[in-house]
Length: 256
Ligand code: DGL
Image 1 (cartoon, protein in one colour):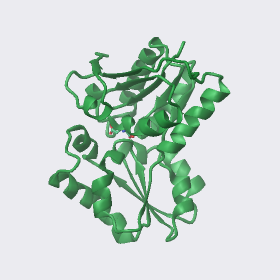
Image 2 (spheres, protein in one colour):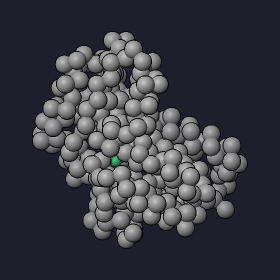
Image 3 (tube, helix red, strand yellow):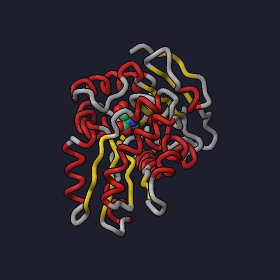
Protein backbone atom coordinates (compact mmCIF):
# COMPACT_ATOMS: atom_id res chain seq x y z
CA UNK A 1 0.00 0.00 0.00
CA UNK A 2 1.24 3.47 -0.86
CA UNK A 3 0.78 5.46 2.33
CA UNK A 4 0.82 9.21 1.70
CA UNK A 5 3.27 11.83 2.91
CA UNK A 6 1.32 14.41 4.93
CA UNK A 7 1.99 18.11 4.44
CA UNK A 8 0.46 20.98 6.32
CA UNK A 9 0.67 24.74 6.51
CA UNK A 10 -1.59 27.63 7.48
CA UNK A 11 -2.58 27.84 3.82
CA UNK A 12 -1.13 27.52 0.36
CA UNK A 13 2.46 28.30 1.38
CA UNK A 14 3.50 24.68 1.76
CA UNK A 15 2.52 24.03 -1.85
CA UNK A 16 5.77 25.83 -2.77
CA UNK A 17 7.62 22.77 -1.41
CA UNK A 18 5.79 20.28 -3.63
CA UNK A 19 7.51 20.72 -7.02
CA UNK A 20 10.94 19.76 -5.66
CA UNK A 21 9.53 16.97 -3.46
CA UNK A 22 7.38 15.45 -6.20
CA UNK A 23 10.17 15.68 -8.77
CA UNK A 24 12.53 13.80 -6.46
CA UNK A 25 9.91 11.31 -5.25
CA UNK A 26 7.56 10.81 -8.19
CA UNK A 27 5.85 7.68 -6.84
CA UNK A 28 4.87 9.14 -3.48
CA UNK A 29 1.27 10.05 -2.66
CA UNK A 30 0.58 13.43 -1.11
CA UNK A 31 -2.01 14.45 1.44
CA UNK A 32 -1.98 18.21 2.08
CA UNK A 33 -4.01 20.15 4.65
CA UNK A 34 -4.20 23.95 4.48
CA UNK A 35 -5.44 25.42 7.73
CA UNK A 36 -7.15 28.41 6.14
CA UNK A 37 -9.66 28.69 8.99
CA UNK A 38 -6.77 29.80 11.24
CA UNK A 39 -4.53 31.51 8.67
CA UNK A 40 -2.21 33.36 8.96
CA UNK A 41 -0.19 31.71 11.74
CA UNK A 42 2.58 34.34 11.74
CA UNK A 43 1.18 36.62 14.44
CA UNK A 44 -0.85 34.04 16.38
CA UNK A 45 0.09 33.09 19.95
CA UNK A 46 2.22 29.97 20.18
CA UNK A 47 -0.48 27.92 21.95
CA UNK A 48 -2.92 28.53 19.06
CA UNK A 49 -0.34 27.32 16.51
CA UNK A 50 0.46 24.30 18.70
CA UNK A 51 -3.20 23.35 19.14
CA UNK A 52 -3.88 23.63 15.41
CA UNK A 53 -0.79 21.57 14.63
CA UNK A 54 -2.00 18.86 17.02
CA UNK A 55 -5.48 18.74 15.45
CA UNK A 56 -4.05 18.57 11.93
CA UNK A 57 -1.38 16.00 12.81
CA UNK A 58 -4.08 13.76 14.27
CA UNK A 59 -6.08 14.07 11.06
CA UNK A 60 -3.04 13.29 8.89
CA UNK A 61 -2.40 10.19 11.01
CA UNK A 62 -6.04 9.15 10.52
CA UNK A 63 -5.36 9.53 6.80
CA UNK A 64 -2.56 6.99 7.35
CA UNK A 65 0.33 9.33 6.55
CA UNK A 66 3.75 7.74 6.97
CA UNK A 67 5.68 10.99 7.46
CA UNK A 68 4.58 14.55 8.16
CA UNK A 69 6.11 17.63 6.59
CA UNK A 70 5.51 20.70 8.69
CA UNK A 71 5.55 22.92 5.61
CA UNK A 72 5.55 26.10 7.65
CA UNK A 73 8.51 27.99 9.14
CA UNK A 74 6.31 29.63 11.78
CA UNK A 75 5.13 26.29 13.16
CA UNK A 76 8.46 24.50 12.77
CA UNK A 77 10.51 27.12 14.60
CA UNK A 78 8.03 27.30 17.48
CA UNK A 79 6.61 23.85 18.07
CA UNK A 80 8.25 21.03 16.10
CA UNK A 81 10.03 19.65 19.18
CA UNK A 82 6.72 19.38 20.99
CA UNK A 83 5.07 17.57 18.06
CA UNK A 84 8.01 15.16 17.85
CA UNK A 85 7.62 14.38 21.54
CA UNK A 86 3.87 13.83 21.29
CA UNK A 87 3.28 11.88 18.05
CA UNK A 88 4.54 8.48 16.89
CA UNK A 89 5.56 9.65 13.41
CA UNK A 90 8.60 11.37 11.92
CA UNK A 91 8.38 15.07 11.09
CA UNK A 92 10.32 17.09 8.56
CA UNK A 93 10.28 20.81 9.30
CA UNK A 94 11.38 23.94 7.50
CA UNK A 95 13.23 26.89 8.99
CA UNK A 96 15.06 29.90 7.53
CA UNK A 97 18.16 28.67 5.70
CA UNK A 98 20.80 30.61 7.65
CA UNK A 99 23.60 28.10 7.07
CA UNK A 100 23.50 28.06 3.23
CA UNK A 101 23.05 31.85 3.23
CA UNK A 102 26.12 32.31 5.45
CA UNK A 103 28.09 30.17 2.98
CA UNK A 104 26.74 32.02 -0.08
CA UNK A 105 27.21 35.63 1.05
CA UNK A 106 30.26 37.58 -0.11
CA UNK A 107 29.40 40.90 1.54
CA UNK A 108 28.65 39.19 4.86
CA UNK A 109 25.19 40.76 4.87
CA UNK A 110 22.15 38.48 4.72
CA UNK A 111 18.48 39.48 4.78
CA UNK A 112 15.88 37.18 6.31
CA UNK A 113 12.25 37.81 5.42
CA UNK A 114 9.93 35.78 7.66
CA UNK A 115 6.92 36.01 9.95
CA UNK A 116 6.94 37.54 13.42
CA UNK A 117 6.54 34.08 15.01
CA UNK A 118 9.57 32.73 13.14
CA UNK A 119 11.85 35.69 13.78
CA UNK A 120 10.99 35.75 17.47
CA UNK A 121 11.45 32.01 17.96
CA UNK A 122 14.24 30.48 20.01
CA UNK A 123 15.12 28.11 17.17
CA UNK A 124 15.72 31.01 14.79
CA UNK A 125 18.01 32.75 17.29
CA UNK A 126 19.88 29.51 17.94
CA UNK A 127 20.40 29.03 14.22
CA UNK A 128 21.75 32.59 13.85
CA UNK A 129 24.16 32.00 16.75
CA UNK A 130 25.23 28.64 15.37
CA UNK A 131 25.62 29.42 11.67
CA UNK A 132 25.67 33.19 11.34
CA UNK A 133 28.74 34.14 13.34
CA UNK A 134 30.58 37.02 11.66
CA UNK A 135 27.57 37.57 9.37
CA UNK A 136 25.35 40.61 9.62
CA UNK A 137 21.82 39.16 9.62
CA UNK A 138 19.12 41.70 8.72
CA UNK A 139 15.74 40.27 9.80
CA UNK A 140 12.46 41.69 8.53
CA UNK A 141 8.89 40.70 9.39
CA UNK A 142 6.93 40.29 6.16
CA UNK A 143 3.78 41.73 7.70
CA UNK A 144 0.79 41.39 5.36
CA UNK A 145 2.53 39.29 2.69
CA UNK A 146 0.81 35.99 3.50
CA UNK A 147 -2.58 37.71 3.12
CA UNK A 148 -1.50 39.09 -0.29
CA UNK A 149 -0.54 35.59 -1.48
CA UNK A 150 -3.69 33.96 -0.11
CA UNK A 151 -5.83 36.70 -1.67
CA UNK A 152 -4.37 36.07 -5.14
CA UNK A 153 -2.67 39.49 -5.15
CA UNK A 154 0.85 38.37 -5.91
CA UNK A 155 1.55 40.93 -8.59
CA UNK A 156 -0.69 43.81 -7.56
CA UNK A 157 0.77 47.28 -7.16
CA UNK A 158 -0.17 47.33 -3.45
CA UNK A 159 1.74 44.06 -2.91
CA UNK A 160 4.74 45.48 -4.73
CA UNK A 161 4.70 48.60 -2.54
CA UNK A 162 4.44 46.48 0.60
CA UNK A 163 7.34 44.31 -0.52
CA UNK A 164 9.39 47.40 -1.36
CA UNK A 165 8.89 48.74 2.16
CA UNK A 166 9.94 45.40 3.68
CA UNK A 167 12.99 44.97 1.47
CA UNK A 168 14.23 48.58 1.62
CA UNK A 169 16.03 48.29 5.01
CA UNK A 170 17.91 45.20 3.76
CA UNK A 171 18.81 46.78 0.45
CA UNK A 172 20.06 49.88 2.29
CA UNK A 173 22.31 47.68 4.39
CA UNK A 174 23.82 46.11 1.26
CA UNK A 175 22.63 42.49 1.50
CA UNK A 176 23.79 40.20 -1.31
CA UNK A 177 21.75 37.20 -0.08
CA UNK A 178 18.09 36.98 0.87
CA UNK A 179 16.56 34.08 2.77
CA UNK A 180 12.86 33.47 2.17
CA UNK A 181 11.87 32.29 5.63
CA UNK A 182 8.19 31.62 4.94
CA UNK A 183 6.81 29.05 2.52
CA UNK A 184 4.34 31.59 1.12
CA UNK A 185 7.10 33.92 -0.10
CA UNK A 186 8.39 31.86 -3.05
CA UNK A 187 5.04 32.73 -4.66
CA UNK A 188 6.20 36.38 -4.60
CA UNK A 189 9.59 35.70 -6.13
CA UNK A 190 8.89 37.46 -9.44
CA UNK A 191 8.02 40.72 -7.68
CA UNK A 192 10.86 40.29 -5.18
CA UNK A 193 13.35 39.97 -8.05
CA UNK A 194 12.00 43.15 -9.65
CA UNK A 195 12.73 45.05 -6.43
CA UNK A 196 16.10 43.58 -5.40
CA UNK A 197 19.29 44.89 -7.00
CA UNK A 198 20.67 42.47 -9.60
CA UNK A 199 23.09 39.96 -8.18
CA UNK A 200 21.28 39.36 -4.89
CA UNK A 201 20.99 35.60 -4.36
CA UNK A 202 17.64 34.33 -3.11
CA UNK A 203 17.84 31.24 -0.91
CA UNK A 204 14.87 28.93 -0.97
CA UNK A 205 15.29 25.56 0.72
CA UNK A 206 12.63 23.47 -1.02
CA UNK A 207 15.29 21.16 -2.54
CA UNK A 208 16.88 20.62 0.86
CA UNK A 209 13.48 19.66 2.28
CA UNK A 210 12.86 17.22 -0.58
CA UNK A 211 16.25 15.61 0.10
CA UNK A 212 15.46 15.34 3.79
CA UNK A 213 12.10 13.67 3.07
CA UNK A 214 13.88 11.16 0.83
CA UNK A 215 16.58 10.46 3.45
CA UNK A 216 14.01 9.82 6.17
CA UNK A 217 11.81 7.59 4.02
CA UNK A 218 14.87 5.61 2.96
CA UNK A 219 16.02 5.24 6.56
CA UNK A 220 12.58 4.11 7.69
CA UNK A 221 12.22 1.83 4.62
CA UNK A 222 9.01 3.58 3.64
CA UNK A 223 9.79 4.73 0.10
CA UNK A 224 6.97 4.06 -2.39
CA UNK A 225 7.88 1.59 -5.13
CA UNK A 226 7.59 2.19 -8.89
CA UNK A 227 4.36 0.22 -9.09
CA UNK A 228 2.57 2.30 -6.40
CA UNK A 229 -0.54 4.19 -7.40
CA UNK A 230 0.17 7.85 -6.77
CA UNK A 231 -2.64 9.92 -5.24
CA UNK A 232 -2.70 13.67 -4.57
CA UNK A 233 -5.24 14.87 -2.02
CA UNK A 234 -5.73 18.47 -0.95
CA UNK A 235 -7.89 19.74 1.89
CA UNK A 236 -8.65 23.13 3.37
CA UNK A 237 -10.23 23.84 6.75
CA UNK A 238 -12.14 26.73 5.14
CA UNK A 239 -14.77 26.37 2.41
CA UNK A 240 -13.63 29.40 0.45
CA UNK A 241 -9.96 29.32 -0.47
CA UNK A 242 -7.60 29.62 -3.43
CA UNK A 243 -5.74 26.37 -2.88
CA UNK A 244 -7.03 24.83 -6.12
CA UNK A 245 -5.38 27.61 -8.16
CA UNK A 246 -1.99 26.44 -6.94
CA UNK A 247 -2.42 22.68 -6.98
CA UNK A 248 -4.23 21.99 -10.25
CA UNK A 249 -6.14 19.36 -8.25
CA UNK A 250 -9.53 19.39 -6.57
CA UNK A 251 -9.67 20.66 -2.99
CA UNK A 252 -11.99 19.18 -0.38
CA UNK A 253 -13.40 21.12 2.54
CA UNK A 254 -12.32 19.57 5.83
CA UNK A 255 -13.85 21.28 8.89
CA UNK A 256 -11.42 20.78 11.77
N1 DGL B 1 3.75 29.61 5.41
C1 DGL B 1 3.99 29.71 6.80
C2 DGL B 1 5.45 29.94 7.11
O1 DGL B 1 6.29 29.37 6.44
C3 DGL B 1 2.95 30.46 7.61
C4 DGL B 1 2.76 31.88 7.34
C5 DGL B 1 1.60 32.42 8.12
O2 DGL B 1 0.57 31.76 8.18
O3 DGL B 1 1.75 33.53 8.68
O4 DGL B 1 5.81 30.61 8.03
